[in-house]
Length: 410
Ligand SMILES: [Zn+2]
Ligand SMILES: [Zn+2]
Image (cartoon, rainbow, N blue to C red; front, side, top):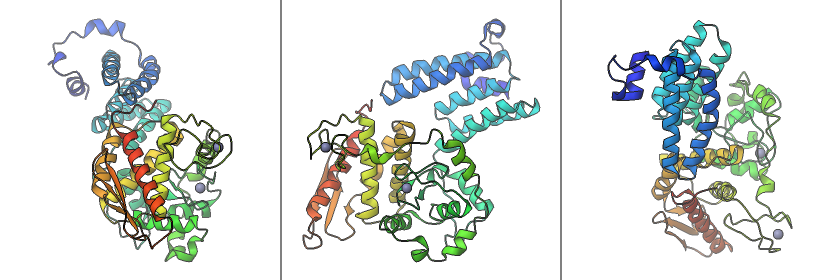
């Protein structure tokens, strides 16, 4: 394991066997100290990447790689040294090797009964699952509730694809174990967890979930419009640890999206995410770019729920899932989009264009990453069709601009 990894990570410099090993043994930084350094450095590297300062990020990652490797070579039996390497691999988005290394770390930790390092390895493995783009998505028979095994397989394969409709306000959220950022709702008992699981990507495809979100936002009750509601609900016989997560998260789980998209002076909702001034009282808004993007993502999701025609295509589904994931990382962790998300956003929008309204009254064409055109097709369908379709066009355009490589979000 060790040699194989050394070769893979350091390449030719390390060579076959006869590399100078001795001098680093005495000078290597102990793995638990490296872990602290990594906390700071990996975060810095992520920030630098978000600032589009790739050269600086690369330099920092090179030092992180070197120091982690040296520390592991000094004591290859220390599980923490392997956790560190796994974290660096994860930061480099080398998911396969991160998993391999972290599994090894976990094994070593178990052998030495080191439960805290086993916990670190588990946490990092969870991050691998969260961030790894799913290659293939399992196909389930959506007419039947998932078995426990299917549910676990689904979670393993596509954790980032899991999202649900808030049963209280009808917004789309990523994590069941947290309060809704729009209405503060979180399940309080098993029956509410069951309802959240029911109205999730475990049971329904994306267009159906958008339809469910609309009905909840219109104030309807899920048992009135979901076929086989009771059977699906009772198919979940445990809360899957969700209630415990909510309890643990309660302290730092206080975000309120509703206050973020209003004018601080007059309290009115400001619809356009690109606004710098309140249209009602003309107060300056001073919104950070990251917040503008969060609002823009929310506006697009609401348009997908209320006004835009839903599609069964993979690209449409991926776009909705991308938005839900973006909203989560923007609102919850104030993290800017990754390179992969930026790239996917433009690609997917170009593929799902044209975007027709559900009433057929208008259409938005995404022609390129910078050109978005709106067109009214039928003025008769609704008196506001013109402003609506222009609003959607502007939000799509703003979204593409903020997601482009050129814009630093800080
Ligand atoms: Zn809610
Ligand atoms: Zn105002």
